[in-house]
Length: 174
Ligand code: AMP
Image 1: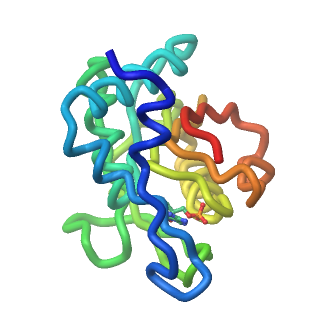
Image 2 (image 1 turned 30 degrees about the vertical axis):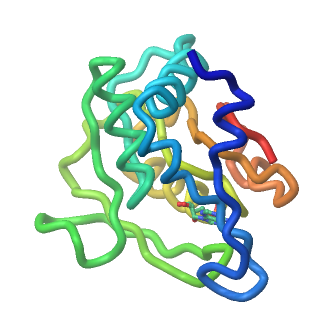
């Protein structure tokens, strides 16, 4: 079985992507290796095992990969939170800032039932702008965000402070 060290070593640093000054944490080497991918999903599932979860909301695009895998692993539903203009049905939306730009996220209006316990999933927490916008959107829909799970946390950016005290579960911390 791979170790945490193997996972850490498999994240590739890509300098100046997508903009000068950004060091992009590329998780595709983990996805390409079935043992590493399985282990990453397993560790994420372990860290959220204390929670009773109704649905996982995964954030486009890499949050779909880990969110869907985790939903499948845990036997719960999956809801995609997408960039503006991608979802076909009626949506609620929220604007947010990225580490490198600006965007709007959307969720189908009927994707969640009021009071459902939601685990938010993304691949990586940087400044926390995306996840904090997702929390605001879910609050507006009266979903109950019981926790947030990411594979990678860029601790030095202190994104955690923007998560409104929701429990954050991260596996690989830089
Ligand atoms: P943020 O809103 O700043 O927390 O950014 C989080 C989102 O942007 C996640 O969906 C990440 O996939 C992506 N992202 C931001 N910064 C990086 C980075 N340095 N490396 C890889 N992905 C990043």
